[in-house]
Length: 162
Image (cartoon, rainbow, N blue to C red):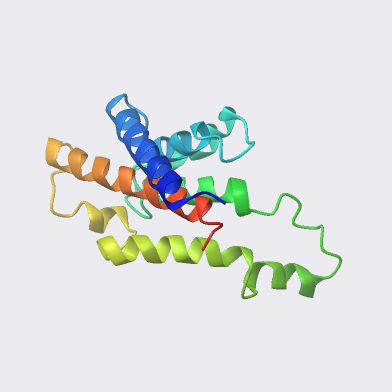
C-alpha cells in the first residue's frame, strides 16, 4: 500500500505525462493509458496501448464516451480486470465476481463517479460543447480532462481501488 505522499507523487507524474503525450499527438485514451503503464503499477506490456487507439475523440471521433475516461478504465482494467473470466466454476460465481460488493465493477463505478462529480458527465460531446472542435481552447480543455483522468486512475489504483 502506498503512502498518501507516494500516491500524490504518482498522480502528479501521471497527470504531467498524460498532458505531455497529448501535446505530442497521442489521442486522449492513449495518453491516459500510456502514462499509467509507465508508472509500473501493472505488469502489462507497453503494446497494450493499441487497445486505446480507437477511443480518441469519444470513440472514433463520434464524441460519445470520453476517450480519456476510457483510457483510465483500460488502465484500471490492467489491475482489476479478470485475466480469466471463466476461472470461476459457475455462472453465479462469475456474476458475483463482477457485481458483488467487492466485485470488479465497483472500482470502475467509483472512478466514473469521481469524474462525473468533477465534470458532470463522461460524454465527450458534452465535455467539449462550449468549444469549437478544432480550436485551441477545446484542446486545452481536453488536456485538462486527460490529466484529471490519469490522476484519478492512479488514485484508484494506488488506493487499492477504493
